Amino acid sequence: MENQDINEENINNQEEINPQTETTTEENVTETPTAEELLAVEKDRYIRLYAEFENYKKRTSKEKIEFFTYANQEMMVSMLGVLDDFERALKEIAKNGNEADLQGVELIYNKFKNKLTEKGLKIMEVRAGDNFNVDYHEAITQIPSPSEELKGKIVDVIETGYTLGDKVIRFAKVVTGN
Image (cartoon, rainbow, N blue to C red):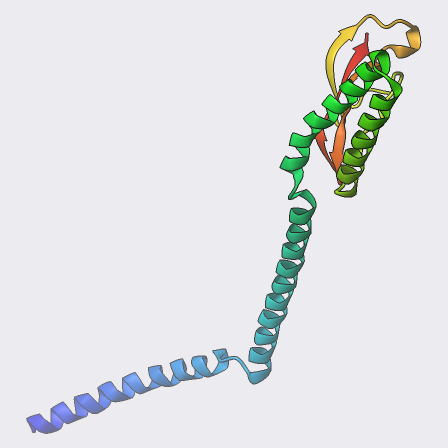
């Protein structure tokens, strides 16, 4: 009799457990995604990964182009001092020297300047009377403007400015009027 009571209790307990497992399996069945949903999720992941890879390729190619464009920037900056010395020498030889010396130095200067220009160096065209722009000019000092139209504008250019590609590698040093 005791065994029968225990068996009946076990059967009753199993019946109570079975309805709960049936409901959970029904919930699990409805929550499992269909093949179309899985395909859509994987397609979305693929498209995002592909777009990310394309962005990576574009970014690295852009960085490579910038690297080659500005790789010789340090060398160019160091050569600007030599270019300035040539310009000063030309002025002095024009004042005191003979014509043959001047032509020889001008020939070397032009050849040197052309080689730097071939590599992307550009001279900033700055003249007295131009507007002062902090993106391209460095104001060394301010003086009282000789005329009313030169107020806030460039009065004199002390040192030539240079760009390499689109990047300023040396600002033009100028005197402004106030």
